[in-house]
Length: 120
Image 1 (tube, one colour):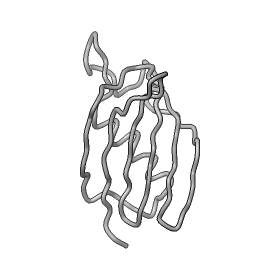
Image 2 (tube, helix red, strand yellow):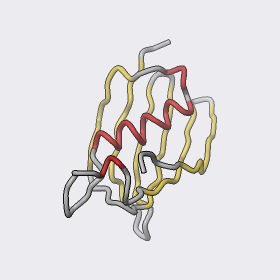
Image 3 (cartoon, one colour):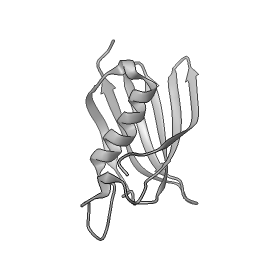
């Protein structure tokens, strides 16, 4: 499989900005897992950034364009095939904060960061 399937959980707009949450699961045959690492597959950080956070950001807010930089990026816990995840996005003007949380019985923050876009 060469893509992730997302299910929108919520999308809210407030005077301060917008936020959204998506549910997803990492399929064991996801293309990004090939060779990363044999016998101990992990979802690469670049896939978390591009295929999860940036993909959904562009889906919700296509007018933002490409990010100028990424700040406060932390990969706190590995993401494995089959992991149930929740992507949380929060936008204010030209920034989108994102978090990827493993949604098991004890939710765990796996990755977080901020995408900075050119002011419009």
